[in-house]
Image (cartoon, rainbow, N blue to C red; front, side, top):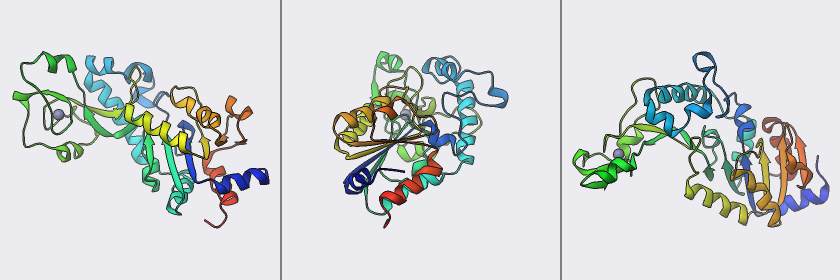
Amino acid sequence: MLDPALIADLRAARRIVVFTGAGMSAESGIPTFRERLTGLWAQVDPMEIATPWAFRADPQRVWDWHVHLAEAVRAARPNAGHEAIAALEQAGLDVTVITQNVDALHHRAGSRAVVELHGNLLRLKSFVDEEAAFAAASPTICRACDGYAVWESCDPYADRSDLAAIELRAGAVPRCPGCGALLRPDVVWFGEPLAVEAIEAAWNAVDRCDVLFAVGASLEVEPAASLPWRALARGARVIEVNPSPTELVGQCHAGIRGGAAEVLPELFGIIWPSR
Ligand SMILES: [Zn+2]
């Protein structure tokens, strides 16, 4: 599968990054965020409904679409690829997962160091109408959601745990227990920037790593698509695992054609046989 000299380099690596994209979730049966859902939602273009403008115009419709996606996420299970990555971390290696996926399957498989570039579908945050809050006479920061809120409408006894207890489920769009703002999934919608903390954490992990595995990532969405190239430029060993190789495969140290569930357990077993 790999050149023996490269295997020796990989085995000597101190810091490992595994960068995962939609292909990883697709192997667990989860539709990608860019893909149309089935059934009632088949006619709906995700790039039109997963946006702040769509939510402002019709919060209930956007909520219902995400509920449908959340049902697929809850029904899914981590695959052998997720499990192989988590096992490396549990064996004591320094592994950071950077993922474009919003399904938290890496967490469910047992990975702890996970940077979620596009957020987490099953976590909620408030939909912040900054204009309204700043136009108010007494704006404040909500203790439950950290959003800008109107002081008079806040419940001083509400806190983060009250917000964390609310789930993405069928029904009316819930509101923040602290400030009454509508709640939305904590994902990066089309037209929204990535969270600064997430992209900084990703860059830091990539800049420190000795090896980066790019797994099931199409490398079409910036700035995430730049991460493997950045690792290469900084001298890290870069391996692509993908059923449909990207242009990275011509530049990186090895490209393995295949899915994560099939390739990663075997690949990691070759590199780290004692783990
Ligand atoms: Zn709030």
